[in-house]
Amino acid sequence: MRRIQRVILPKVAQNYLSKRQLAANEKNKNGELDIERDWKSARQTRPLKAVVTTLQAMMGPRQRCMYCLDSHGADIEHFRPKTVYPKRMYEWPNLLLCCTECGRFKGNKFPMSGKQALLIDPTREDPWKHLDFDPVTGNISARFDLPLNDWSAKGTATVDVLQLDRREALSAGYLKTLRHLGDIVERALLGGAIAAPALMTELKNADDHGLLAWCLSDRGLAIRPFNDLQHRYPAVWRQCCKAI
Image (tube, rainbow, N blue to C red; front, side, top):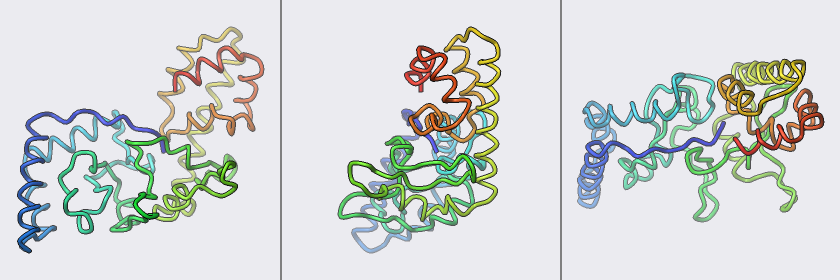
């Protein structure tokens, strides 16, 4: 996973979403809201297609799923499930791009701790604050929170809901990206003088699974060649970390 910058929705699409939400709220108040029918009807309209296009643009040319970053983002996903939170079904900040598999695993699951959502929203927070990566197995797991002396609650819930530690194809994809990133750093080290901007451009272009933030963190320092880069070119390492 990686942090995703949410962009401003085109005005026509935003106005349409606002009107649909107001109408849905009124129907819900009167006990007349058929959530699935309402959404299916809206989903066929041009403004909703513009929403999909915007979400895809946020993910770049590969248009990956915002949760796993491994598969193609197939459709709009409601972060807070629309059947549970109908007052959020047309809110732009609640809409993500999701692959079929992540959508199937998530369904209407939305774990909470009091009023706090436990599922990670990649458009609102850095997932690696709550998640960790195993460079041997390729599995994603919850991060151990040292101040709390416990595993991240958000990380644990997200891994459990999306089954990020039980998907072989997903793990294989993450390991492939790790190898690509490592190869790029290895070549840079062999080349001698390293220009941080050029290195970061190449790394970002190869980072299909959002692993770069992990590799350039204290956790990435445990493995080669990232620890070699930090030890041999500390100034370049710092520039790369700032560019994340």
